[in-house]
Amino acid sequence: MFQFTEFLRKIDLDPTRVRLLRHDARGVAAWRRGGPDAFGCFASFQRRNPPPYGGAEVACHFLPASSLPDGTLTALYVGTTRIADHWAWDGARLPQIQDMQIIEGEIGRENVDAFDLEWIERGGEYAERLLINWGPGGRAWSQRAHVMQKAILEIRLQAEEPPFPGFSNFLSRISEIPRFPQAWTGSLEGVRGVYLLIAGNGDQYVGSATGVDGFMGRWRQYLLNGHGGNVRLREADHQDYEVAILEVASPDMSLGDILAREAFWKAKLGVRAHGLNAN
Image (cartoon, rainbow, N blue to C red; front, top):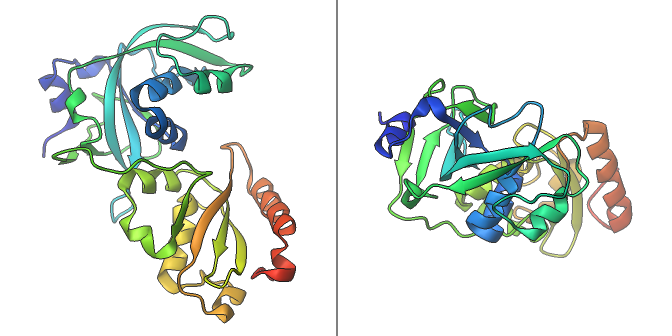
């Protein structure tokens, strides 16, 4: 099977000098909103400990994609950057790739390094076309290219996935889950939070996604049986809900924090008294 290290050599890059980064849902949102500029600016800010670029000269960037049937993670290649320079971020010196929405969100953050990244043209024609097996090494989002071999699973004829609408604008139906683009599925698996189900008659249900597969893991349960094990939803006998995201949990939020936000939304929307929530 063709390995990603072979792809690197074909575009004249030494795998020992390359870092592989599988970014989270924030990277997906940046790519879908503003392409290489917004994403490149997003990737130009990284927490200092541990440093994800790890002293490498080059970084290959990936977005999360659908897991394989055995749960193995996959990743969609979006391009390669050279790491030209880095410094402790203080809000003064701006990175080479700039997007003001990203930069404004980074102002005031501590323990962050900024990087000057330069997109490399070689291999750029494979952006959003080359899908790899991210395992072994599973959940580690930054890895050395020559240490962890990544099998290339697919090379698409063209990049044709529709853009992810963003979490605040996301609205779909449970029945549409099997047809979600791979990047959509990967981003929704990568985050937890609070969501809203809307029945055909307008009844609403507020729930939370707290498992390892995030929103997708919880919504797949509704796809399986229509109620996800909830008594009130089973009694309501609705088989297909519209689903929206009320709030995305930050990575450092605990289970208790997420459940507290779920309770907040239940009270705000009145779904205990006038909706499908029993508690």
